[in-house]
Length: 383
Image (cartoon, rainbow, N blue to C red; front, top):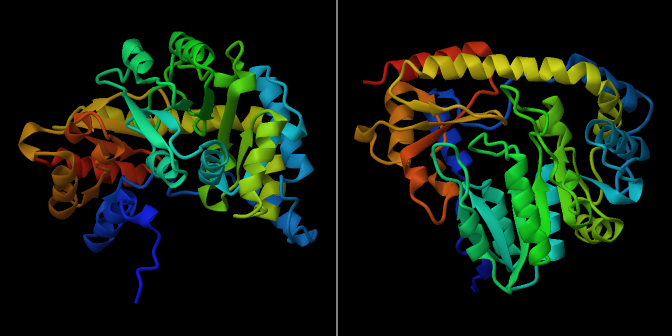
């Protein structure tokens, strides 16, 4: 029988998250690897969704997203960032992951080069390959995870089409400074590049760090596709409600892929999120306070372990340095699961240029406090 599987899947790795989660399950490990909360978002969002279902809002939604959700997204972009978007500049997708996939498919031609900052969210690299693009990598270097301006400039060629930005950054927790964003903007203008800005952790910043939307940088709104996530903002990642914002022509291009993949998104979930955004002013201070306390809990206790933490300015991840005797990150992650019963993510899979990932692990603190305390207690027992 022929091999019917497409060649483009030959080099697609199994997600590290699946590997670690399976090992964690087998060894009954405390899972600080999975990048999502192990607790619910606000109860009132359940009420919003239930009310929508009881009202009969259970059939296909409009393919671009429901009016009220797009209006709520436009309102918060205006109120929080001073950015003006109309409904033709917004599309609702099945999570930010689908928005990313659709954007890469819609804008990459075979051979186009795409700039990534490593460590990168793993779907970027795979999505680029699936679209026929060529990833070109610039490294965010320890300890502050800053990038070299010259390295970025040298990565650009006549084939470069897109820069991918993730801010606040997963997995390092970096929040890009205004100076860094302005430099990236200058590069985008100089070389006539599109910027895909993944901002799903936009409301999770710490220690007075400020998130600056890339589209708010002068001259960038017209060349930026901003992607974010209701799931990340409100703690309902399994509902898969994300969205993209860009000029109408580009939203139509993204919809050209979206209409043949998911077509439409979770209808009661959209109605619930439309109402949730109306409570953003009340909700966000509580949200930030909750995660600030979790960061402080984990970071301060990690200081009493052999794993040296890099304090993040955003997201809900902490990168930690591995003790030398543990070997590389993958060996260390497996050892921690099997011998100490705690799961983390080895980040070398998020690198393709630098070997810095071999020396670190990623810890997720979007967990119940009892889970975090148990996990860090186990790390403190590492000899």
